[in-house]
Image (cartoon, rainbow, N blue to C red):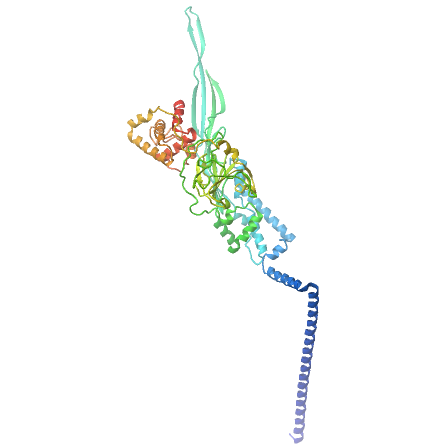
Length: 631
């Protein structure tokens, strides 16, 4: 390459370098200029915003003042906090749903309710009163409040996904099941009264023949047969509780719970020289519908079910508020678990009433000598007092007595009422006994007037030991609610007033001398061993029941006449057996068939209770026996 070419090449390279340097310098100058412009615009914008905000703040301050500013700040903070609460959006919107959602909700509800109604149809097939069946259906039917509350809980807590299946699947989680017992010992008795006649002839002294009709005494025969086996409902189970349905023997015609001696005409006929009439009566084991059905609920099991569907355990109370809002009569036991009473709630009875009963079947409900009323029925302390207060501090743990025959439908701790018992009676009334220190009966148990059901105490909302006693006609849809929430309360003195100054509560003494003791002494000599067993059993029973020892001799005479001191004595023509020849119906009433009825002591106690209830004293029972040859 020549020197000239080298010089041209060098010049070209120098020119290119100069161009690159100039471009770079130009870019740098442009960037610096743009940066300065941006900073200038930013400063201008900040200055403008400050002026605008400052002017606006001065204007607001001039208009509202400093307190108005504080109010605005408070509202802002409240909205921030409210926004953080999941349920606020639901409540601020009033729980509103779209039209499509409301249609879906209604379809879900109608489907579930129809399934629930159908699930309790088997109850309608039972032979019991309409009111009793409606109450049982209400208590065991799948409750719409449960699926409805799952849906509302999901709406409120929108971040939570609740497992809400279709209505059929939800229904299958709540459907009740029914158990039955087979009755094989119903009895039918057929009585036939047959009257016959014949002609008699004779010839008088003059040889004239005469004839006349001779009517023979009527002959009565009674045949016993067993009715065909049949089934009755004995138990209802729900996923969260069970109810055992009590049964009892009823006597027809009449349907009474005790033998009534009535017969129903069944026909008549004639043949030859005879005519006859037949009539029948029967003994049938039926559902005992005298009381209100009661479901024993399991609160822990229900809570586990709710949690398993997606409700957090800590939010269980919130869920239950939704349930109660949907159904105000939803069982509170499933909410607070109050049915699961603590230890010490129940105790054994330690008193036996042997006083009198008013003509309409009532007794004073507390076994003390004082018949005063501490607080009456009506307005009190700005509220309404739905019962009367009896007893007091002077009689700690005094026996509380059933005021009338009935069935225990409630025996548990009950919030402000403390330990409480409710008894349903066959006239539709219900008596209630509150604040007891202990309960001595169980739900479903039949009790007689004067039977101990508890002990006076001061549990619940109470200012001191006493018995709060109510007489109400319960609301069938809420049979255990306070009278202020349903049902009708009556002044208990309507029934207690007439017996206020009558009928002792202590043991009765034998009424008058009785001397016709012939059977016991004869059987004692014939079988001294059996006599001694009966003597010991009756002595123990009289002691345990706190009865006068003078009752031993006439009681032994009764046992001798009925069974010759044989605790296994049995009547081949009926269910009568034992010391007192009790029928099955009598055994049910005075202890239940679950007791060991082979025990001489069990038989003795039950027999004495029967004597007291029907005759007051064993001497009076013997007088009846002398006249009728039975008691």
